[in-house]
Amino acid sequence: MKALRKLLWPLSPLYGVAVYLRNLCYDRGWCPSVAFEVPVLCVGNLSVGGSGKTPMVEWLLGYFEGRRKVAVLSRGYRRSSRGFQLANPNSTAADLGDEPLQLARKFPKAVVAADANRAQGIARLLEAGDPQLIVLDDGFQHRRVRPSASLLLTAWDTLYPDQGYLPSGDLRDHRSQARRADLIVVTKCPENPDREARERVLSKLRPLPHQQVVFATLEYDLPREANGNTLTWEGLGTGPFTLVTGIARPGPLLNFLQQKGIAFKHLRFADHHAFSKAEIARLNTLGPVLTTEKDAVRLDGRVAECYILGMRHHFGPADRAVLEAFLERF
Image (tube, rainbow, N blue to C red; front, side, top):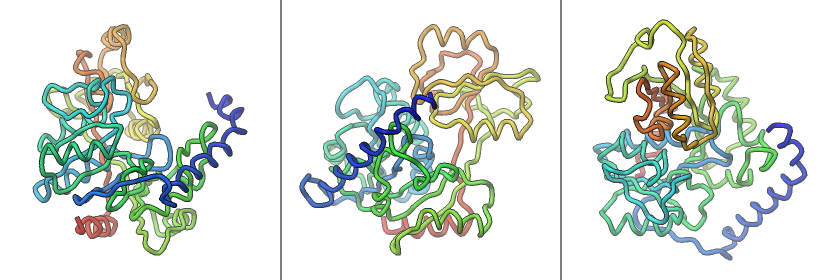
């Protein structure tokens, strides 16, 4: 796969020019965009997957819980449904997409919906209720909506200035569009990055005067059963278990488990992978299976001995203070 992507390098400059021209049409007003009276907070990135958008949306939902009536609008990537879909207790990943369903189940008080047409989706959410804030999940490239503010995520080890454009690289948007962000969140940082390391990152990002930058590390929960019972790591048994992932970049999770000295086998599937009946049958022969929350909603209880591992962004006191001050405007 990597060799094939290298062969496609001549197409990457063309892609970069195409996304630059597309954004220029919106910047000049040649393509229409719409703003809404209700605050719209966009969470996105410039690359394809792996920067931690869903954990960031979860962090925001946890922060605003009890303070604001929040609705989340997602595209619902890889769902089989069409148009506007509002989450309900019977929703499946095929209805909503795996990430919106994960959000709906973890935050039942939030209104969660999917619609590839974000402007239409926001209008439908406003018709359905009276949200005080709409979080636009993975909405940075959807220029038809003008958000009130944007959070741009980039991972510590794959910063957008270091990446190339699709199809040989991972950038799906032009680097220059980082200027539209109000707050840049550097995710998946090593624990407690020192000032010198932060300065190296800032020298690459080169934030504009109006932009603030915060740093976050990934933290993992203890494994839990499908019914919510939490286990210790020893509770998984003495033998190796199978880690099943269908996420863009499982590297941080692998490093976490390896650092704990845990024996496991890894079955890696493509991001948002829809598990077939044959694959489910195979997983049921492997003994204990550990998977992520995102994968768990697609496995949908079909693996008997399945344990779920949650993850979240952690901000140090100084970074959290900056982020909370930014959010107070909403």
